[in-house]
Amino acid sequence: MKISMHSMSVGLFVPMLGNLAEILDKAVASATNRKFDPAVLAGARLAPDMHPLTRQVQLACDFAKNSAARLAGVEAPKFEDNETTVPELQARIAKTLDYLQTLPTSAIDGQEDRDITIPIRDRKLEMKGLPFLQRWMLPNFFFHLVTAYDILRHNGVDIGKRDYLGRS
Amino acid sequence: MKISMHSMSVGLFVPMLGNLAEILDKAVASATNRKFDPAVLAGARLAPDMHPLTRQVQLACDFAKNSAARLAGVEAPKFEDNETTVPELQARIAKTLDYLQTLPTSAIDGQEDRDITIPIRDRKLEMKGLPFLQRWMLPNFFFHLVTAYDILRHNGVDIGKRDYLGRS
Image (cartoon, rainbow over all chains, first blue to last red; front, side):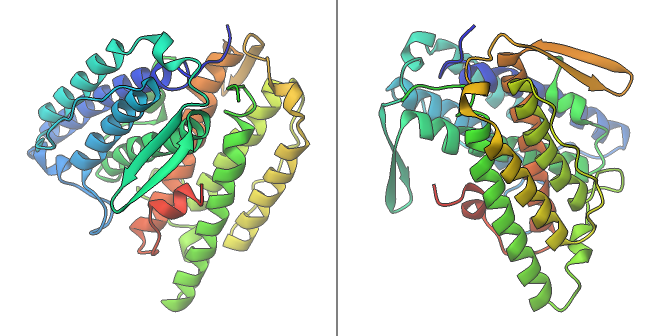
């Protein structure tokens, strides 16, 4: 085995997004047990000026999809950000996983030196493929993934780090 | 540039822990401005059965230190978990950064196939170096790092994703 750009991006996003899907199943079960609409959890947030669960899941998916596409030098499909329920978030994750699996390993491996341009509001961030993976893709992906977990945990959903890590 | 086990472990932990230290500075400033003891933040948590900020920071440090040492095939120093204040947590981060910088790049690079054993309570998890990095080190490190951020953000500390990502 040799470490590669693909194994440390798509190879990591795919299992972690799969774990997120299972965590969302537990969120629905928890809401149903506690007799409230699971959509309440979809709108939950940790602070008034932080994104709710829906947006955290959309962003985790988009950092995986868009940044893997940038590494591969292709244009990622744009998904509308119109999810408001947990089943819709599950569908978003499934679409993201489907897309990630269309990117050939060979299109991402060896892209350490690719010039990457990230449009951020009114400016552009430019970096090479390796620092992009190390300092942008992974920190951003995990930021939204863990915050999604933390929102659910804060709202009493019975999940633990084992759910987050999955059956590795 | 070529991706390597060191660049995706120590090369990522060092800047992210540096960002965490700056976030903790902002937490102290926020508490001081709002006229409460910053130690209140050190004890804050997102759920009654989740670890407080102190433990999240200790664990982010330990996942970086212990797992990098395991990859390098050396025994990491054990740090006592006795921090109760933010300055003590800053010292813990500084000690961790010092230790990470003692690990030679060459001791971690090329360790994709090393047999890793992780003692977890009553059992042992065994995996090779690459899946250990991909499915254990990074997910666990980010779990505690982002949860530390989320605890502070939930408690009104004026930080944003820019602080978490740092000046990359």
